[in-house]
Image (cartoon, rainbow, N blue to C red; front, side):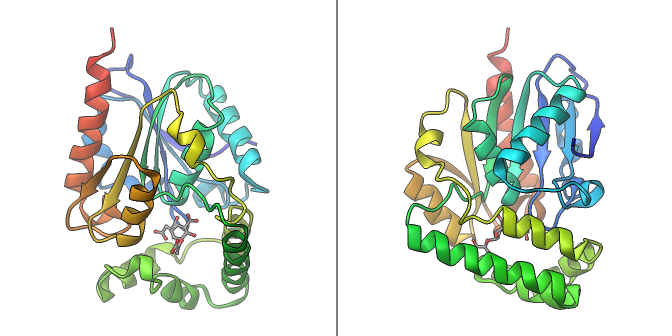
Length: 259
Ligand SMILES: C=C(O[C@H]1C=C[C@H](C(=O)CCC(=O)O)[C@@H](C(=O)O)[C@@H]1O)C(=O)O
């Protein structure tokens, strides 16, 4: 099966495609505030399995996602591309990059977790994600969403921002969310840190200045990262202008190198 998505032709079609991967609970529409900044490039905004127009696409695990993405790009004749992912989308982009697919030009990751190395930590995370998956499947969705966005990683959210997210996320299919969270649990994700360090393509990491957890993860990776000021975990949502400028600077650097 392939993934649903929205194509936006670029002013410079010879440039590589920008393939955007949203986070858990999101959809291709999450990038509305940033789309207009990237009109130079051809773009593909995907709905991840279990989300948006891909809500009925099964997601047994990471390898199956890689197959779905590969088939989706081939179906749309996308042969040169960047992957730009937020959170869950960042994890999937990093996993994909570590398979070293043909045509990948680079990855830009916003608050994605490269994985866990400690077996006990992995087990605890699997159990935690399974509890969340059961809650998404069994409890009133808005109630679970409220609890979800009260987790420490979202501490920068105001009450109004949290309520707006709950409103926007309330259209998701609870069972599909539970499946995606359970089958793509961080505890099931391979540790990607070593493979990421050896990537043959550019790898840039972005982090909200108020996202202490993922700044620590970026530092532990031992790699330079770009801070997005006045933003928490969801940096592209909380400071779209700074996020866009950072990503454009990264892409332009490599575009200028192109013959
Ligand atoms: C709560 C933690 O992990 C979750 C937080 C972020 C990821 C995500 O995609 C959330 C997007 C959003 O709700 O805006 C999610 C994931 O990668 O699947 C994580 O499970 C945490 O403290 O690490």
